[in-house]
Each structure stands twice: as C-alpha cells, then as structure tokens.
Image 1 (cartoon, one colour):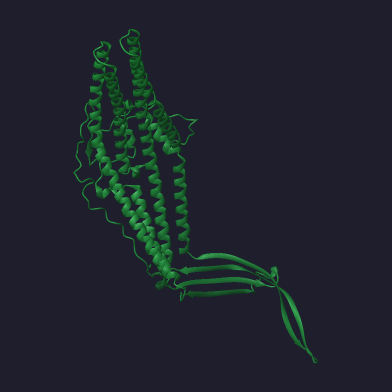
Image 2 (cartoon, rainbow, N blue to C red):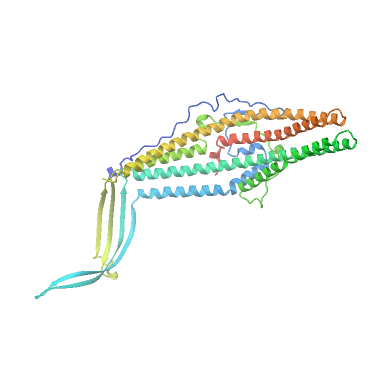
Length: 474
C-alpha cells in the first residue's frame, strides 16, 4: 500500500515560461524625460518608482477619487468576478475530496419470493416461500491514486482558480482605468463644448458686424449670407459634442453601478486634473509577472499542462479498495441483535485494454489544447509589450502635440484679433476674417483634445504596467 500511494504522477510537470529577454519596450531607448510641453508640465520616467495601487490619486482630483472608489465598490462585474472566483475555489475543494476515503451509509429493505422444490411419492411438486430481508451498514471506498490522475485533476482545478483570481484582478484594473479615462473624456468634451460655444459667440458678433456694414451700404448681401453660413456651420459642431458628452456621462454612471437617471457624473474640467510629473516604468522582465492578463494566460497554460496528466493517467490501470460491514435480519427488530453481521473487503483493479482509440485521442487532444494555450500566452505577452510601447511613444508625442496646439492657438488668437480690427476698418474682406475665425476654432478644439489625450495616455501607462493591483484589497 505504501508503494502504491507513493506512485508518481504521470504527465508533464508545469514550468513557468521564462520572462522575455528584450531589454526595452521600443526600438529607441526610453528617454528619462519626455518632450517638455510649452508652458506645461514635463513628465519624467523613473524605473525605480513603485506603482501605487491607488495611482489615480496622482491626478489630484477629489472628484475622480470618489468616482473610482464608487466604481470599485458598486460595479456588478466585480461582484460577478468575485463570485466566479469563489466557485472556482469550491471546485478545488471538491477535487481534493478524492484524496480521502469515501464513506457512505446504506440501508436496504426487500421482500422476495424463492422457489422450493419437494418430491412426493407420486410426483415432483413445486412450492414457494416469501420472506423479508433487511440490512444496514457503512461502506467505505478509496481510489488509490497510483498514477496521479487525482493529483493532476486537483492541480488543474487549482490552476483554473488562479485564472479566475487574475481575471478578478484584470476586472479591477480595467474598471479603475475606465473610470479614470471616462472622467478625463468628460473633462475634454466639456472643454471642447466650451470652445465651440465661444466660437459660436464670436460668429454671432461677426454676423452683427457684417449686418451693420450692410446697413451702412459698405458690403453686399452675400457677405451677410457668408457670415450666417459660418455661424450655422459652427453651431453644427455642438450637437455631436454634446451627444458624446451624454454618452460618456451615461457610461460612467454604469461604471459606478447606477442608472443614468439616478446619478450624474461630476462636472469634470481639464483644469481639475494635475498631470503626474513622475511616471513609473517596470522592467520588461517584470511586466509579465505584474499584468493580470498575462498571469491569467499563464494560469490557463498551467491548467492545460495538468489536463495532459489527467488524460495520460487514463491510459493506466486504476485500483479501488472497498469494504463494508452490514447487519442483516429477516425483521427490523433483529437488525442489531449481533447475530447477523456480514462484512466484505474487496479490491478492484481495472486496466484499459481497448477503447477504440478514445483514450489516446483524448491525450493527443489535451496536448493540442496545451499548444493553443501556449500560443495564446505568447500573444498576450506580445500585446502587453505593444500596449506599453505605444503608450510610451504616445506620451512623448502628446507633449509635442500640446506644445504645437498652444503655439497654434496663440497665433490664431492674434491673427483673429488683427483680422477683426482690419475688417471693421474696411481694410480687408470677410473671407480673410472667416479664415482666421476657422483657424482659431480648430486651435481651441485641438488644444482641448490634446490636453485630454495626454491625461488619458498617462492613465493608460499605469494600466498597462498593471496598476499595482497586487497591493490592493480586491
């Protein structure tokens, strides 16, 4: 028995994939300092900086902190992920039960008729006897895990539970990232709407100016129509922006687990966010041990490896030991009188001989499933590195874009002011004024989008690096 219980588990022993050997995320070395923005914050990369599990607090927005806290507390998807993890852990407990003997209590009551043969002097006569039989007692059985089928099954369930644990972490990270991104999106859209409304106000002033000049006989009627066209064109910018804002507000209400009619998002403004100056950057070898999506893919790979062991063990014999002790009697009152004790000890050995190729096919299928999981893991790692690389490059380009938009807005503002003065003095025509007005409008909208994108990409860097979920109470 000791030799049987010490049998080794067949199938491969899982080995974690090695971390990528690549030393950096992009072809060019990551700069320690991003391109400085004109009149703005210069962001710096610090590889030694730890990632806080409450990284959104670096934006210094109390309203944002409140939204993220409500999201992580009330979002239904987190509750579903927690319940799924609990279910997976119970599956591990259920699988471990096969390590122990199975004890059951059985009782039977039966009424039977048996044929009795008697011989008379003249002929053979038949008769029958009707009797009752009662029995009660425990039965114990134990599956000796000679080739590790049970151990590999438990290993598989443990890996699947780890997968659900990392899925929960991924849901936590995704929700916190979405809450921050949507909040920044609301602030950017509000800034764009404000810019568009200012442009419409300027268009109305231009139209009033042209109408006065028409009344004075200084311009033709076509100038008024042109100014009206420009006004309506800029007014048409507002409805899509307001619709995008409404969608973002509805989305964030769902994130916090509330109906859009019952909860409204704070009035986020770009000025209410502080751009983090110091940004963490994990080493490439650390990224695969931090990101929950990569760890979840690794757990699935582990489960697929254990499944090969389960399928391999089915090719070998199985041994089951069993025993029972029963009390038997012809009537209930005599069951425990002591005279009707019966016991059985048995060993059952079963070895597969011919299954039409089913068992071998199942093992080959398990190996194929492992190859699928391995490819999925490798793809997940590549996508993780791509996300970080894209974000690093985006942050550098965002600073350039913000600088360019600020310079453009300064130039467009001065140009519009000069064109309006020239038009009022009759030194230029309406077309040049409207061109300057259009450049100014595009510069205002472009700057609002660029500033919002820089904030959002900063948030995405924290998400891409794992968001410090391992330090959080999920």
